[in-house]
Image (cartoon, rainbow, N blue to C red; front, side):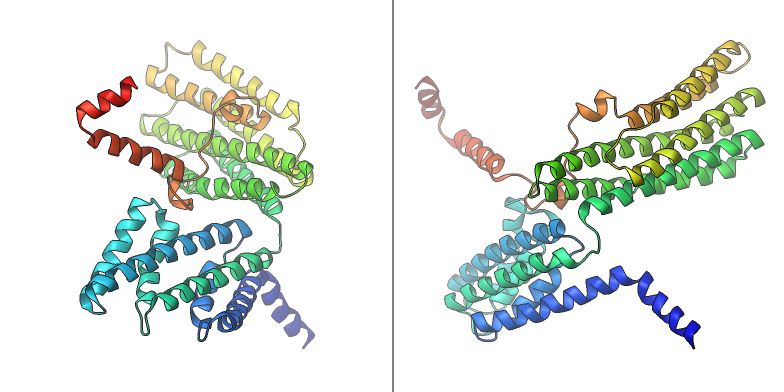
Length: 402
């Protein structure tokens, strides 16, 4: 009996993150329903729907989606009232409302986060009992639902954004190390083309994780801006480490493709293959140790001897490849040197000394993940330029002289 109870308890433990999200979402919907009914009669439905749709796995994501809900609701309500004023309630109003809503979302560059909410909210607004006061009430109910969801989203995850970022970075570093180790062993044993294909497939899966790690480090960075300066400095360190992990993933993927092409074009001498395998094994060990150290001290530096060994092994491989350049096809030499280049970039990323990490701006995630894909200032400047070009040439010349 005790063993059964322990097994049952373990099922809840391993799913606690999901259970916590479900409980918080349910509480948010219930509170929104109660408060929405208090604000306006029968207003709890809209508030509960918005709260359920807005609660996400983090405060950052819920705030982003919540503001998108509010912007979408405002645009949708305006489109619905405008269509109703001219056409009355009917099939034409429904079609024009959705059309105007989608056009408005496109003009405002709301992106995927809020654009879908515009026609949905518009259809809710033109429902039974439509009037200007009802439209205003439904907007207030949307604000209530979004606000409750944003507040309660703080409790949807058992870890802080910084801790989630640390776990994500360490996990991806370990996965890179494991794949490099597999490739190193395969080179020593004499790998086949199908095995190289499996390495490339795993590397492509790793590359698909880049948007998620970027969103996670951005979330930690934004969250830390509301905390003491020391937390903000630590978030900046995590941000740089996240960019470094992106660079490492790209290089691991490039290495897997190079090894595939090496085998596809006949391979290289066993001596060079062993040197390449040793280089990848060295890089794998450095990444493994780095991930372990990062978990215990995420805000410290990387041990220099680890990256020094990578560079030393890379120099050794370069010397061996160039010494046999007369016996190896030039294309194969170029591919071997490509592996050397990738591992050096990995070493530079671990040290975080490369200007490509520190001095080159990194996009703050794809525009589809922003509340507004284009800032209001840029939108205003664009419309100003368009209107200016519509003016007659004489007036534009006069304005330019003035």
